[in-house]
Amino acid sequence: MFIIGEKINTTRKSMNQAVRGRNADLIREEAVKQVQAGAHTLDVNCGTLPAEAEPEALVWLVQTVQAATALPLCIDSPNPEALAAALAVHQGKPLVNSISGEKARYARVLPLVRQYEASVVALGMDDRGIPQGKDQALEVGLDLVNHLLADGVPLGSIYFDPLVRSLATNPEAVLDTLSLMQDMASRFSGLHFVSGLSNVSFGLPDRRHINRAFAVLSVANGLDAVIMDPLDGAMLALIYASEALMNKDRFCLKYIEAHHQGKLKT
Image (cartoon, rainbow, N blue to C red):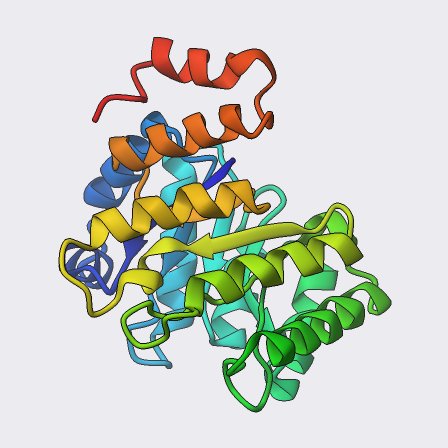
């Protein structure tokens, strides 16, 4: 499982204050904690800042995090100007979060993905918004991935996000999402699947239980990348265990290594 650490995000009060105040020590401390917990890359996002301030802030954030870890980053912004500025200073192969089937967004983000030979999170939505059923979701997903391939993005660099909706408002949300991943995988061998787990539990109590159960089901249906808090030991343990049970971890070697590294503590 490719773990994308989610906590360096200005939607969190402490991170918002750190970015606005250019508190590099706090940012570096958070980055190191997530890497030590098992993150393979870190999502960096300062999208809650005013649009005119975001490019400079995102550049600072990328440089600050990469001063603390050698990992490439997941650069997360809906603002193409901020993405362009951050990609220009990023070291290594970045992951751009994100592109979609929305025509204007696609046209502005694709050149950056190609210029920097980046991997990219592909959101399964278009100008109609998030699909309302699994048939439309499959149509949108196929169209988006085929366009990316035609425009020169390698299949192995595409991380498709099926955009699970809240179970509280859509009882079929999880079943539709799992079915979509299966259908997409059958058409694109080698396509990656990524998900932010918390959307599925929005509006429900004790959300962590829903999130963790969804993670297990998703691993069983093709999920190979996840945006999560790597300090959630229970979630991480369930992901490692699920991959072992699904024969995605031959002889449980990664599970055993994670145990020896102390990453399976709950």
